[in-house]
Length: 162
Image (cartoon, rainbow, N blue to C red; front, side, top):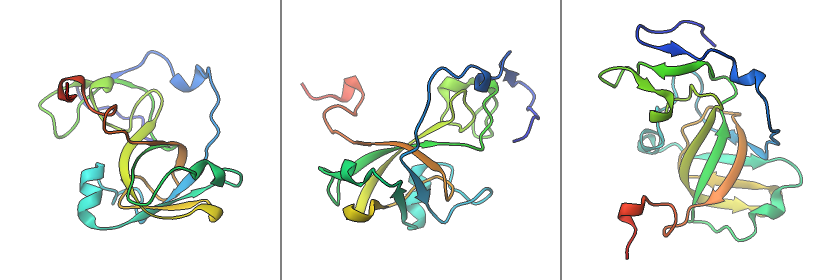
């Protein structure tokens, strides 16, 4: 983790890691080809590479896959364990100026959670493994949770039919 900041960036006046108010239990780990320096910046770019990935659940979580099916879209929530947590305002290279952390999909955030919508390509329920069409996370990134992507719920309100 680097402590350097770019001109225009603002540090938080505290370390969010010192304000732990909840506990997490990782449910699994990502297995991908990605590491620091070569990981796509988002899921769309990861998908363009054609490189699949998989999730290996920790022992005891295999039964939680019941109801999921191959071909289904899911939301993968990861814990970006190597990411900085201390910036309130960032200056991304792709933007025209500073933006608040909550206005960005940057991995630098008070709680370094990632969110990727992926498609299940295969499942071995008994082994607690599922294949993903793509992922934009480093190999061995901890998985916090999986949720089904629901077409009626996971769209902005203005796009909702009716």
